[in-house]
Every structure is written in structure tokens, then in C-alpha cells.
Length: 149
Image (cartoon, rainbow, N blue to C red; front, top):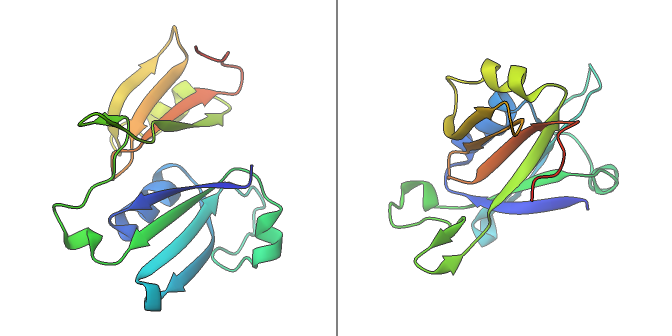
């Protein structure tokens, strides 16, 4: 899988969350002012000297596990605009995505005051769930955490 898309109300808040809290890099931005939306492609890059927001389409297309943030102009100022995640008014929407890391307990401790928690780190499950600025759920787990069903 190359990427998944979620819609965001405020790209400034969302970019700050995904970059500054979760440690993702901004691969590229594509602006479509004539259609009133912008796209932001983020993910993990471990090269120490990576230059953000300069990746061409072809190299980006060879990556895996990219998140595309889509911002429709005006939603950041429209209180009636929201996106369905989980279940809302009998509409089932996007549930969550998972990020794996070396040590979920340590990572979640390092961001504990920067996020809205859905479920704090659980030693038994070895996972935590937090919400991004739009309420989308992000599960954090260690690489060695068995799949939870």
C-alpha cells in the first residue's frame, strides 16, 4: 500500500501533530487552488539529512505507508464541518491507523502532554490510542506487539 488519505480541517494543526508529535516528515505538498484543496503527503524517513517537502511524484510513489492529509479550503473556519471517524449518528467512518515503533511505552511517555489520549499506554496490551486534531484515532504499538483482535 502506498498511501491512505484523511481529510483535515486545519492543516497547520494537523501538520504540527504529524510532524512534531509523531515525528513524520513532509514528503510533498500539492496545491490545487482552482479546486479549493491542498494535499500533504507525510511518512517516516530515517535519512539524517532528508530535506522535507521536496520529493517528486515518482520517488514518492515507490514508498510505503504514506498518509495523505487533504484540506478543503474553508473547513478550518466552519464549525459545522466535521469528519466521521468511528461511528457517528449511525454512520460508520474511518476508525484508526497504527504506528509501530521500537518501544511504545517510552514513546507514549515522551508525548504524554502533547496529545489527546483515547487510551493511555496499557502494559497488558502494549498499546496506546490517541486522537489527532480532527479526532482520528492513532494506535501506537511496539514492533513486537502481537495483533489484537
